[in-house]
Length: 131
Image (tube, rainbow, N blue to C red; front, side, top):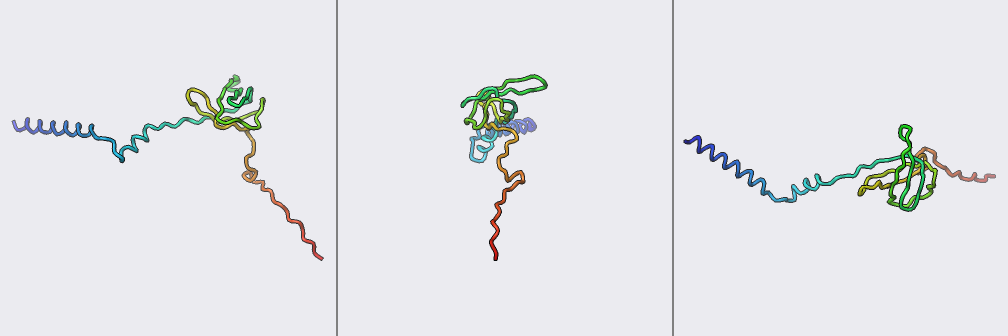
């Protein structure tokens, strides 16, 4: 009889602990963990190819994969500068709302900053005239 009473008391305590844990409201300390698990980053990808068509809002490139030519169309976040048809380009893109959206379009091999590749331009001072 005592064993049954101890077991019954233990089960009641266990159920009370589970019910208390389930009713726990979101507080400042555990709200950060809830927010961290719900944020999803979009994958950034890139593609290289030749420009087939370009406008202010979209760009189409043809790229070769294992001998097959594939046409890809991207929506542009920002208008591109100095890019024309038949240029080779590298596009950094992600998928937004089911569309390929280009965040950056650049010509490969274009030097952004001449100081980075080790060729620093030095201005020579004119020689002083001495008598």
